[in-house]
Length: 129
Image (cartoon, rainbow, N blue to C red):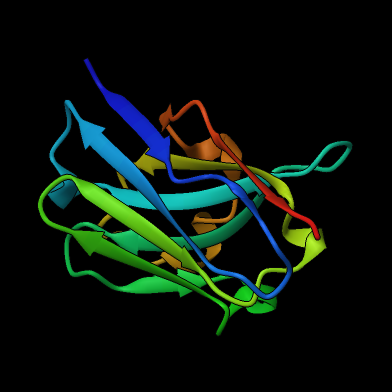
């Protein structure tokens, strides 16, 4: 049984930092990409960052490049480090898995939430003073 479990969401002041974690079980990360998405109330789910389990290549949404960092921690955990948080970053953050680790067109695939096989339940990030 495949499970993705997010953790680390919290209430944080503007300018603060958080580290979100996605614990993956039931699949071999080598064959998958793990991506982080977020969804704010009334908005569509948007892709933030992606990491390939095959070679560790990373991709980011242009809007978040430089503030957010995705990384792999060991065999089964993918982290998303959030810096310089703003109130507009308030959302539920999800991790998701898709079997695209060697896809040559990953840059076009990864931001489409409809292509992912597995999702976590989400973790709430609230940025407020």
